[in-house]
Length: 286
Image 1 (cartoon, rainbow, N blue to C red):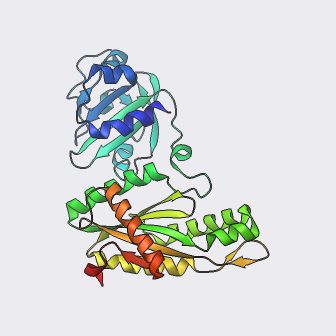
Image 2: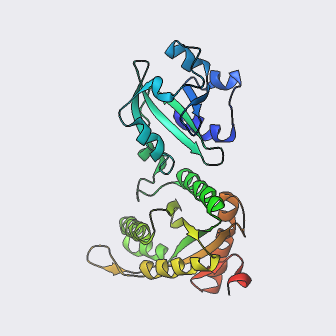
Image 3: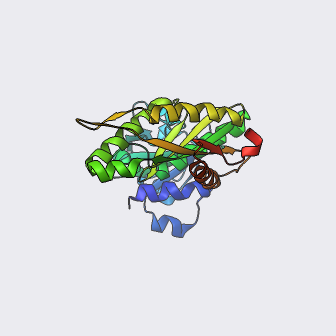
């Protein structure tokens, strides 16, 4: 597994990762910036490479040379998959950064290897984000909802009628259906929303900045309408439908994992009752 991926998945749980064993296991230069892009923490490897023990409290651009560094650090707040080639004391490095909304801190890792984020974090068939990237983006949406006192809807979607397409027309036809459905789902979302292929014919979507949870029903109806449009698989057209389950932040949970679990439960309720979509808490939204 890529070392940059390992460290960026761990540092979000650690405010100041000062344990020596941690840096021995993950031998990469790293630092933490405050909201003014001043270094408030750095590890020994970064001191060694820069040849300076007085890095703390200095601006990051005193040590990192890169055109557009400030723009990059701003962009990763909303697009954490971005990477950038820089010079760290004349050594070529690739930045992987993560902005933590609650603390307004930016964690930076310098890797000697270019990280293939697109390959590692996107589904090969559909090009959609995978689970890890979805969880990361959804967590950022939750932080934004907490700040703006808005709500997020998590939609778990399972296709109905997909298996007969595979059985009758082959896996290539099934792949076409998944690719078309994926594109339609992407087009139905705003830039502030996110989506992932969860596996097989299952998808998850996070709908951001809702004033009320019931407003998620508008997205659900729009998605169902798009899903049911005929799909051209060559010389034939096929149709599928979907069952959707919806959970709402913060009423149904405060973590992405909990919201996914409850949306999954609601999806099975929807499928069993043949109703298109169901909220986890239907009594609240009927």
